[in-house]
Image 1 (cartoon, rainbow, N blue to C red):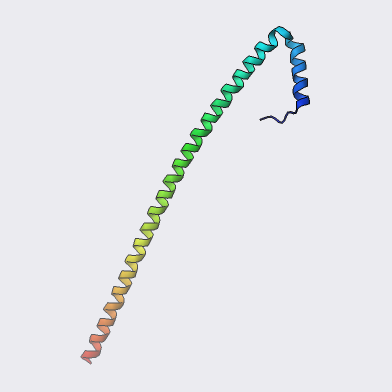
Image 2 (cartoon, rainbow, N blue to C red; image 1 turned 90 degrees about the horizontal axis):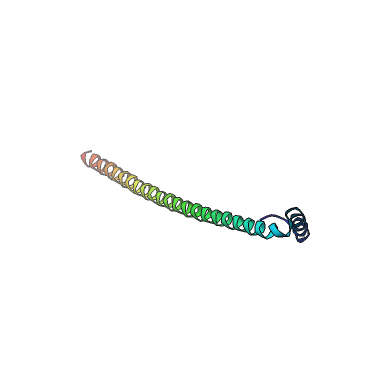
Length: 101
């Protein structure tokens, strides 16, 4: 979490021992450990909830993308069908004009 080496931790412990004294240091260390544990659990819970929500949003987006792709494919097929019908109608009208002549 913090980039603190052994020497820095030893210095902090020595200063804490001098400032707090040997009677209060274990109580303060215990309380500090408890606070750090609670904050770590809260952070992990928040992170899990955040990941769960982002995964849900990603699934919804993927679902919408698939729906759009299907719509585009259906529209493309309809256009191809219309173009084919139009070409068939033109071919038929060209043939009927040739027969009339």
